[in-house]
Image (cartoon, rainbow, N blue to C red; front, side, top):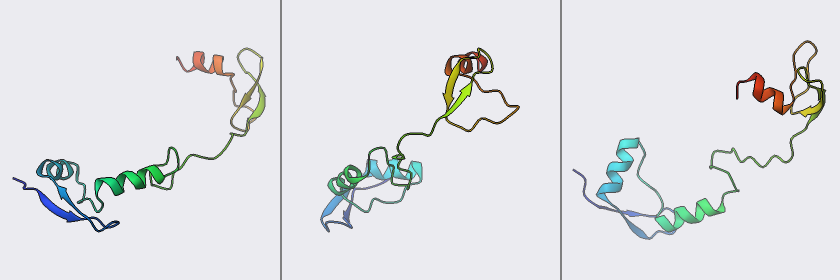
Length: 102
């Protein structure tokens, strides 16, 4: 159904083969043809921040702000990653696992 194609890399301008198997794989997943050779794709991936996926979602936001609270179940002092609200229960991590069934 597919035959190997020769493409030109958008970064280094070198030719590379887009194999019939790769074309089938891309078509099954609705991907467009690659614009870069394997070496340039690998270089771009390596240059991304750790954990980044190229979607502007790098998760390098530093330490999470924690708020002091008293566990509604056991009464122990704890810290939670949100501002506790009056009238809503707050649980320490141990009690949270119990309450959530985990």
